[in-house]
Length: 477
Image 1: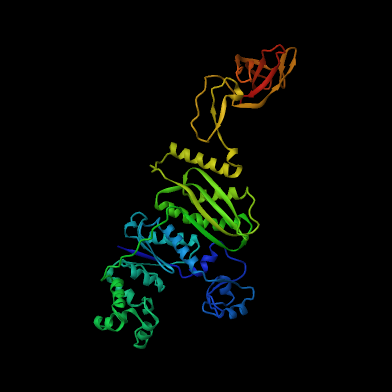
Image 2 (image 1 turned 90 degrees about the horizontal axis):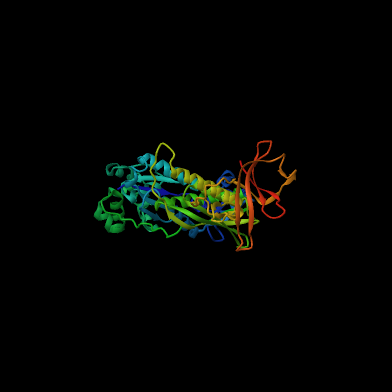
């Protein structure tokens, strides 16, 4: 087995920065009157603020400082959301609170093109989510965790080389209490190598078997099973904004990161979303829901973001949004695909569905539909609206125009002949229609195909009533 540990050293502040960076310096502080700075953003660091600094000193350096109290619950929730995203790389993900994830990647190397390619992809994807990461790889889970937590971003594939790297780590990597660390320091033991060189029996008597077992598990001498993260049955993620936002583009920045998390979750189960909801929460805790419906399941983050952009541009946004939440309302399994050099029917259908979804996101669902023939001889009733892409019924082999007027237009007559930008010359007809007596919309018409002197072709009819008026009903392309 091969384990990759993702450590997030700036997680306390990144939970507040994932939706964007505020214009003023931002720090995260602990609770209490004499609280200290736990983490700071780039603006605060540029002003000279550092972790461990008293909050009063930080205010002296930057009076406009934005202070957030550390939220460990939000950090845990964020870690769980990252675990959902990480499932696209392996089915075995473990949480290591408060700031790390373990991924068993031994079975994923061939799928992602080798260890180097996989590590590069994981690092790049985590950066797109808005996280700085420290990555270490080792044959044991505890070894990978210690290496990443200590800032040793190394890749170790063999047990023989693992001991060399672990020996250099400080003893603070161990899970022990403050008294144990004080005792180790007093005896001059500061590294794992120094600790491991001591007699094992004496070490167990002095510090307990639990400390010794940690060494055994890190070196691979004892099994170290890790509890697997169990994903929820549906995806839902929440994101707090660093400052109130009223512009659609600023909202899309945070929404993009939530979409990336969701697509990672969907990849793990080979599924796509067919309906999702983005909930925007304002300062009064009221929410505005943005619903996006898709014709076919998709987990393409670029496509989903484009649909959200179209929807956000056509709705009234809250004056000041302070948080957002993304939820996959409906998902469906993606059908397996066979790839070929030439476009096939599946590719064409997917492109058509993508176009329909973007048009509906921009114009509304009711503005985009398909057409299907209906068995009625009257042209104005011979079609129905359908869902785009629905299989249309075949009609009778008659010459009919694709463009019908909403209401037939009466034509002028000269010497008893119909005129439209000149005299109309009959090319074909008549096609007689007498029907509709049962519903009060009865018609008695003779239809003709006619052309004027400019070469334009029209579909006209003459009423078989006493007046015998002529009407324009359609236009041929």
